[in-house]
Image (cartoon, rainbow, N blue to C red; front, side, top):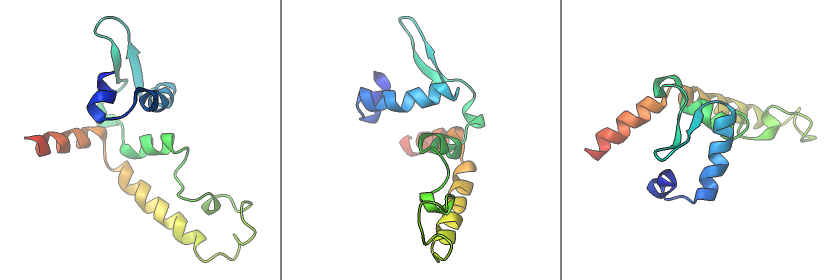
Length: 111
């Protein structure tokens, strides 16, 4: 696949990424001789935060920040809230970046 070659990743890895993106309707497949995968909506409407949250299955950095049953120390843990705040800050920033923004940045860097 051209995408895998261009990005220097294996086709198998690309397929692992494409499947959840298709299920969430961010990407659609086009059949035929010029077929492939395309975005299902404009890049201005898709944020990096949405994609990362989808592929990482959530917006937390550590499980204990949102699930207090995974650790017996969660009620007294001084870092639990730090992890939660860090995740909120990171995803807040990622939500402010669209795929269109990334495309603009890439084009600017290339030429």
